Length: 344
Image (cartoon, rainbow, N blue to C red):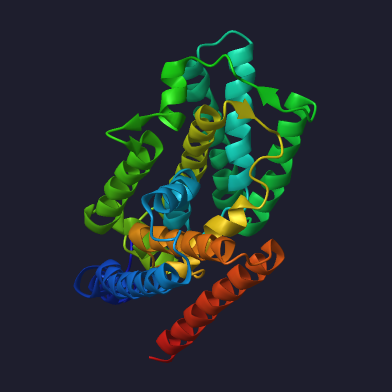
């Protein structure tokens, strides 16, 4: 039982935390800032589209926009999971390997006689289990997300190669109804784009409105304060890590349906593109800020830049340089914003 001085100090400690969690509400402040960044990204994308419409007659066409949407729709599902993870203060370098693992497990089980739907569910569960192991290393052992996910990036990629003996799996016998989720259209719009749009709308709305997901912002903004205010920060970080890997698993299943194959080297470098999109979209590498819509706009910007460079016949080697400069600019802006916030 606490003595009176101890009780008084506990109340004094809890008071500012309660004020921060309710009156200040960092989640709302971060989301308002995110909305400004989203508007800025939309403006940049619009200006780039206008410039490219004059630079190339092939840019402002439905076929080109359809190709751009298809190019990042499945990867955008991974971006959604990564966004939530960065907000909570983590990072996952294993998502590219996990996407590939979902493809390999789905393909392997299908070739063993499983129906593709059951194989897909098992693959997604296995990916979520990988996220649970990463989360356990972070919350149980105390490793950083960076180190734990880096280790699992290598482990999971090795599993992909071991399960396939380094040989791509041809899955041309997949039933048409399964291939439909990756190759079909509905009303002239690819099903992949519709699935991606649905996931983005639901996740962005939930992150902005759901009280439960505010804990993600509180944990990422100030983990100690969140812990003192009663939030089980370890559980939040654990389940967000599981979510990120599960979303990568969903993307891997859709890739399997789209390509009708599982290549053990698929997804190499995907994590860099995903993290770049989320950071360009306004998420802070220090945690506490970001929106799903902003991350998707960041991915869209990278896609528009890539399409523009291809149409302008720019060497693919220089394309990576330009993308890297865009990422460097976004990280630099994030750094100065964090420095400015720390001085307040």
